[in-house]
Image 1 (cartoon, rainbow, N blue to C red):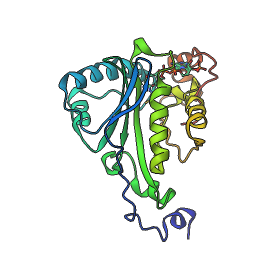
Image 2 (cartoon, rainbow, N blue to C red; image 1 turned 90 degrees about the vertical axis):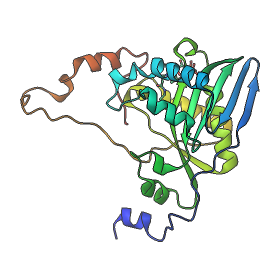
Image 3 (cartoon, rainbow, N blue to C red; image 1 turned 135 degrees about the vertical axis):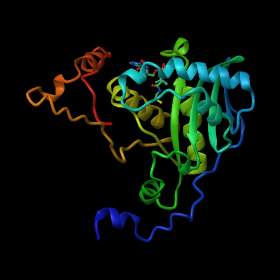
Length: 234
Ligand SMILES: CC(C)(COP(=O)(O)OP(=O)(O)OC[C@H]1O[C@@H](n2cnc3c(N)ncnc32)[C@H](O)[C@@H]1OP(=O)(O)O)[C@@H](O)C(=O)NCCC(=O)NCCS
């Protein structure tokens, strides 16, 4: 039996309900900041504000990563109104300045294999943390930690495994180190890589060109990032 077969053997993948949404409501208040948990968001103005924030924050990533980050308006609207997808919204007074989304029913993320994840963590509740966004005007001021603190505390209360993926670009500036530091701060948690999926290109006309010279603009952007030495793993 291969290692992968062993991983899945004797595992009843349906024995654990993988979606256990945290209850809705305010989860953290700190000074003028508030983190509120939602299931379905019904307020169209809030959905619109979060859409604009998502688009402004993710648009640069669509030039830096192979995976699409920006949602279109209809997708975002459906996502926000879907009660199976949890949202933590960070407000500064009444203004939304950040959002973190978590998919509690793994089948709703068609790019994920629930079978792989359930085989990896048998008997555990598992969710996929899909987006962590701070509005561009509010970035680099320590706001992401407020969302991560709540997400990590809720995961600990629920005994749930939080899965997520990080692009090479975000790894290059230290996002993963930041998540690890937050995990250590709020819940004695550890972050470990469970799989990698990389993007490749085959150029039949470029046999003499070294692979790292294919996309010089991209290499320059990564090198320009403070402290970055280039992409690590995906
Ligand atoms: C990634 C993101 C959520 C971080 O939120 P934030 O509130 O700006 O983060 P913080 O201000 O708490 O910064 C955390 C640390 O990361 C560093 N950092 C944050 N963004 C950075 C960037 N783009 N480049 C380099 N360092 C960065 C900060 O300097 C800080 O380090 P420090 O504590 O040692 O000073 C936010 O920048 C964002 O929304 N980015 C666009 C969307 C995105 O990439 N989301 C993550 C993938 S879904």
